[in-house]
Length: 389
Image (cartoon, rainbow, N blue to C red; front, top):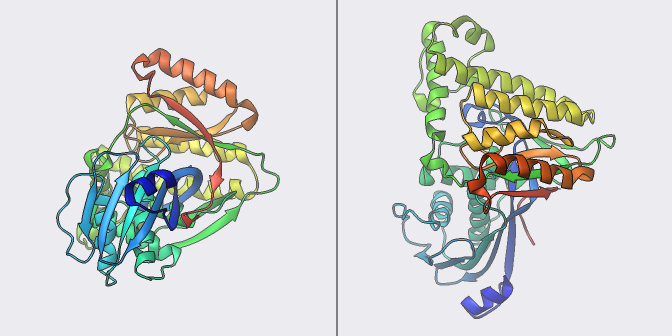
């Protein structure tokens, strides 16, 4: 990338940020309801090379997307342009709410895997937040980076997400599990038990890309909140504004009393939340004790609930999930991200990489030969969070 950067901007880049992609083994679809989540960062992600500009100009080029992005960091953030530069504008928007920005950047950015289910948008946002902060001598803790990037995605990009994606990308450590309570915002980094066997994080890309803003992601968030409203109304609890309503605030006992009264689709969304809360608790214990078999089994159960209760998952992803369950050497896995197109992830035995690749590829492409050119499998390892290289 340095050669390309110098060709574009006339000098080598002084700074290099690596912002990893993330996976969530369990705790999916609950961060926006203040649930419990787990996650890993892994050794593929977004590289951003940049130099600081004293005049406040921002000039960005991409090795992944076409088009040049140019704007002034000192000017008010305008409406979205509908291109890949919106993530840089979103980072500027969220930072400017807190700090005065005077200096911009010249940057070159590149992603290392196909887009779909790995929170590439969050990785990009975190890279830009860190770059703009560096350019303007702003000191941020990793959790401040999480909050600013999440705010940018909610308020500027328009995705009603929680903190899961950004937390995994900014806080994770190699060979450790991130366990985050998105209600209290307390988190733990849990080191891998020495008794646990080695494993790969295997990324199985369906061949489909997707955009969460244009998917049913925001609809599912609204359905979860409506389920909470139903429970509050049926039991006489005072209602709050919908943006202040979360399933985490409703006891499981209230759900048990009211689930037969509310429309089934809302009951299923709540069922996923409460069952996922319990699975995460079990999963953390399994991880702490080195029980990878149980940890993987809970990952599979999480995905099963995502299909039946949260009702996400394309035909392609459900096919991959079913194939994974029948593949030797896979401890467990699920959809990655929201499960609308994108990818599946699995915890797998490194000794069986080729058998896993061959079996999944053959079975999937037999069902979906149209993805022969775009279907991919990558074997990865856990990694540290976003950082200057």
